[in-house]
Image 1 (cartoon, rainbow, N blue to C red):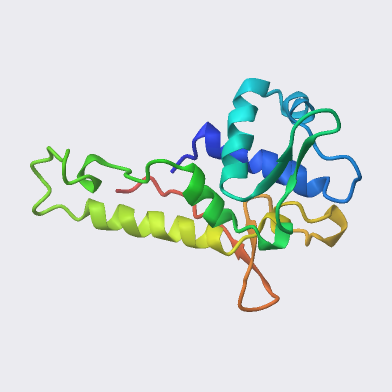
Image 2: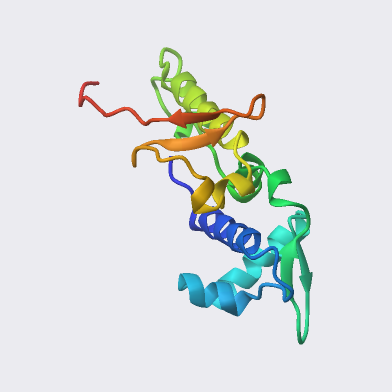
Length: 169
């Protein structure tokens, strides 16, 4: 699964705001655009949507900018992705109205892909914005191919380690 550029940039905006949460002046769009090499116009639309969803507080005019509406620990990454992604239909058969596949009656692919999508979202639902911007000193050294995920039910950090493809189908 691949996130849209919209979701990627939305996460970048939120992470940037979270990383600069303690400063006096609010973060502004030009600052983020310059930092990430993203169009100001595109970011303006993203910031507007994030504000509409209650994730950002925005102020116009001189001295204006944006701040997180709630602490980074209360912003769930899974919820952000559900808000910013427009289509989780990975294959045609996910949409009954447009499904033209002749294999649908006996095919199990739809169920497998639905489970994979649910697992993907489940991992993200256990991650907060604060987890994504934790200071370097507090991070545990993990292998580069592992993804640390905080468990909401305990204080332990789980490691999600993507498995290697064997090339077999």
